Image 1 (cartoon, helix red, strand yellow):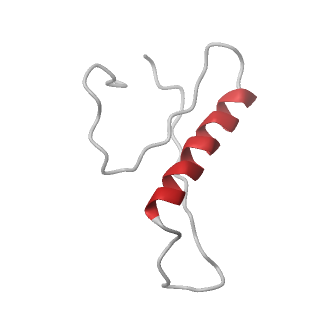
Image 2 (cartoon, helix red, strand yellow):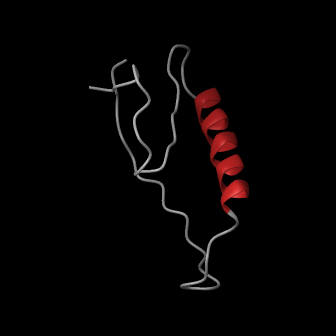
Image 3 (cartoon, helix red, strand yellow):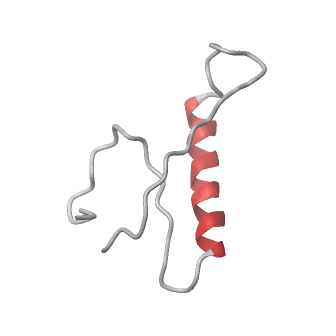
Length: 64
Protein backbone atom coordinates (compact mmCIF):
# COMPACT_ATOMS: atom_id res chain seq x y z
CA UNK A 1 0.00 0.00 0.00
CA UNK A 2 1.27 3.49 -0.83
CA UNK A 3 0.36 6.45 1.36
CA UNK A 4 -0.83 9.38 -0.76
CA UNK A 5 -0.94 11.98 2.03
CA UNK A 6 -1.09 12.23 5.83
CA UNK A 7 -3.09 14.61 8.02
CA UNK A 8 -3.58 15.17 11.73
CA UNK A 9 -7.11 15.20 13.12
CA UNK A 10 -7.49 17.18 16.32
CA UNK A 11 -10.58 16.76 18.44
CA UNK A 12 -11.08 19.80 20.62
CA UNK A 13 -13.87 20.77 23.01
CA UNK A 14 -13.88 24.54 22.71
CA UNK A 15 -16.57 24.87 25.39
CA UNK A 16 -14.59 23.20 28.17
CA UNK A 17 -10.84 23.72 27.71
CA UNK A 18 -8.90 21.07 29.59
CA UNK A 19 -11.94 18.88 30.16
CA UNK A 20 -11.71 15.19 29.24
CA UNK A 21 -12.99 14.19 25.81
CA UNK A 22 -16.04 12.03 25.25
CA UNK A 23 -15.68 8.49 26.52
CA UNK A 24 -13.11 6.40 24.62
CA UNK A 25 -15.63 3.89 23.25
CA UNK A 26 -17.82 6.64 21.79
CA UNK A 27 -14.77 8.35 20.34
CA UNK A 28 -13.61 5.07 18.71
CA UNK A 29 -17.05 4.62 17.14
CA UNK A 30 -16.97 8.22 15.90
CA UNK A 31 -13.55 7.68 14.28
CA UNK A 32 -14.75 4.47 12.58
CA UNK A 33 -17.77 6.31 11.16
CA UNK A 34 -15.58 9.23 10.07
CA UNK A 35 -13.17 6.83 8.33
CA UNK A 36 -16.07 5.24 6.43
CA UNK A 37 -17.60 8.59 5.44
CA UNK A 38 -14.30 10.02 4.21
CA UNK A 39 -13.58 6.85 2.22
CA UNK A 40 -16.96 7.24 0.50
CA UNK A 41 -15.84 10.68 -0.75
CA UNK A 42 -12.71 9.33 -2.45
CA UNK A 43 -12.37 7.80 -5.92
CA UNK A 44 -12.60 4.01 -6.20
CA UNK A 45 -9.47 2.26 -4.95
CA UNK A 46 -8.65 4.81 -2.24
CA UNK A 47 -9.48 4.48 1.44
CA UNK A 48 -9.03 6.43 4.64
CA UNK A 49 -7.47 4.92 7.75
CA UNK A 50 -7.73 6.72 11.07
CA UNK A 51 -5.79 5.40 14.03
CA UNK A 52 -4.31 6.83 17.19
CA UNK A 53 -0.77 8.13 16.86
CA UNK A 54 0.42 5.63 19.47
CA UNK A 55 -1.45 2.65 17.99
CA UNK A 56 0.98 -0.07 16.89
CA UNK A 57 1.10 -0.82 13.16
CA UNK A 58 -0.72 -4.11 12.40
CA UNK A 59 1.56 -6.76 10.89
CA UNK A 60 1.57 -6.57 7.11
CA UNK A 61 0.08 -3.08 6.91
CA UNK A 62 3.27 -1.04 6.82
CA UNK A 63 2.68 2.12 4.78
CA UNK A 64 6.32 2.52 3.80
